Length: 430
Image 1 (cartoon, one colour):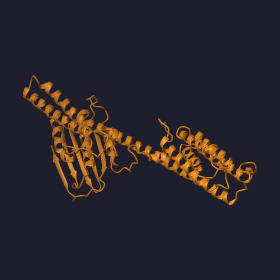
Image 2 (cartoon, helix red, strand yellow):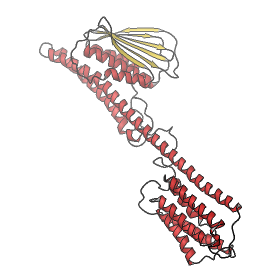
Image 3 (spheres, helix red, strand yellow):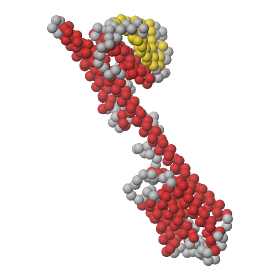
Image 4 (cartoon, helix red, strand yellow):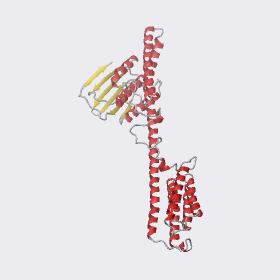
């Protein structure tokens, strides 16, 4: 059968080709340190990371307070409670990011207004802003960060007269440049991660769509193979069964020959169906038998002869290197065309012409008609199957009834990268 690409997942649902882009995780998700579970329901609260942030804030604030003893209010119980509140609200940053960022900003604003020392308390606002932006609450994040920046301006340049410590003076305006740069850096980093997260989500959706598309193509290929195998073999069996029934009493020997033909056709059909199904049961394994191609055309002609159809085969040009997919498609198209002649045509002769040209194969299958108008079974999807096979290779397949009542199937299959042999001509008749 057609060459199988390695894949995982035990069937069409798990198809993954080796040329896919590398995945971050087993589901193609971005790293957990980027998303942190944002945007999805989490079973627990982020205790480990919040405890780590709390340790950094509490220890860092104690160290910073030692260097600001003469400028700020000493860090007391109230100050530590405000620091603890700014950290504790971050436990809600996955489930309620807007509440977390506003809570951290409010606690930090109160901490600054009370005159406590500057320090890593701003880390809580940065984490809350990051969480809100990544989760999609951009307006809330910007508002909360803007709130604390405006509050810092008011405290440092106007409200300091009425706030502790009592001997405080206005902060230099150069300090606000650093504060503004900090705000811009926090928001920019959060926006960058948000954009990357959306890109990862889009890439994951594209991969899933591509996997679904490949699965659909795989199912279609299997259906096409089964249709082509069964349609031809069942047509042979149907014709020979009619012959056997008609001659059972008058010519037992000929009826015996018909039964032998039925058995051979059934055995061949079972073998090819088993080969198709094996690719589903053991994905990635190499086929046990080579895929049929135009080199098996004599067998096809011999089977047609058993049904009473005389097939003439002409070959133009010399066969060069034909890719397995094109070889299989050409064989199946000829097989389906001859099956249609057996089923639906009153003609007992058919002509197959194969033209090998540089970069393509031309197929013509003609019969003299006319159509019998009888229902010989089948799904009615043979012609569409031919077109799909040709289109899958970038070629075309057409079928038409000509004015004299004859029927023609014409197909053109490109041969990408195939070499061509020396020109020649061969002809055979069965």
